[in-house]
Length: 433
Ligand code: MTE
Ligand code: CO
Image 1: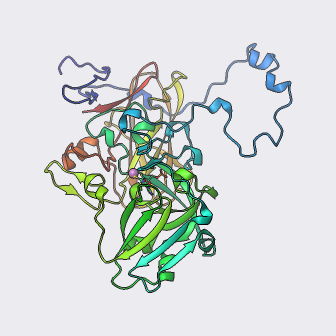
Image 2 (image 1 turned 90 degrees about the vertical axis):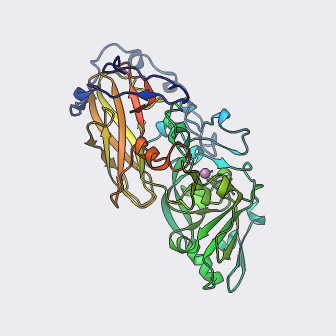
């Protein structure tokens, strides 16, 4: 590609793939963009109708306290919604939608914006009729009502849930133009629930009990095998998210929380826990939730979600619209093993790295918020972020992932994401190679 010059536009669609590659050879990108943050220039005072005219909301009484018994966001925020990609799945009941990460800040995902993934639609469960049964290799099989569950001591924890298929479309190259679609199968809420350990102890797990089958009450009656060690460690039987009842789409009235592990194990509308001495064979486990390697062999039992990060702003759905000058770059980082201790940001496609600023609570197996405040000189940028967790695990490049696992994978793509920012601020999903 000798005709490639510094600052080339990303090329679309390599023959045979839909990868949009961005060649880095000889790039002199954006070194000047690294100057420290400047003070934000205040607008010089000029006649401005926003100040000189009396606005409508300044003249009339607003709605009363009885107008919105259950509040909703401002009508000016209508665009901040979950979105799906219709061509990804055949129908909307066995489908997924995505969290609008580029519209959010901090670490908590509002309940109405948590991405949804279900195999048979949203079950509408009457909590008064709902039961949770524990059976199998236990001393005393038990059945709990929701009222029973509320009588056990409960705990509050913030955890991310990431679908194993998050970023899966990006294995073979840059595909979807927005972090909502590339990384939006993740949400992070505070759960209130009873430790699973407490309920298992109540039933008395026999020494031969090594596995747990968790079953949902939806039409797919989804089941998952969970090793007893994890069940007794930090799993929760949760009935609240962000302080209120679980949303129907998140498993109302009760779901399993499996911190740091792939989303498909977090069984929603949880109705049964069966203790067994070996893992069950799930239809989906061999066909779906298994990583197919180049060799044709599969990785099985890859439960932990690896250290990962993404820049949420700027990103394709959130271009820079304010021109050169002080710019807030922000994003999210997480690890299924613990806390994130460091995030580095590159503005030149991974040649130079600078530490980002982590802000807000740093909780284990939770999203972390990072910022990189810089003075944009208006030149093209190739933005990347790279997270490291408390055990020293570092987020890999997509190339390194492909070398390790080939191109056939869908699951567990925690590779470094690149956004290409043009001089006009327009931002695209690309890959550097
Ligand atoms: N539980 C039941 N009962 N049915 C489902 O279809 N989907 C699983 C898991 N639990 C599913 C389920 C998958 S694949 C994921 S990624 C998470 O739920 C998604 O949780 P969310 O919808 O709260 O985002
Ligand atoms: Co999933």
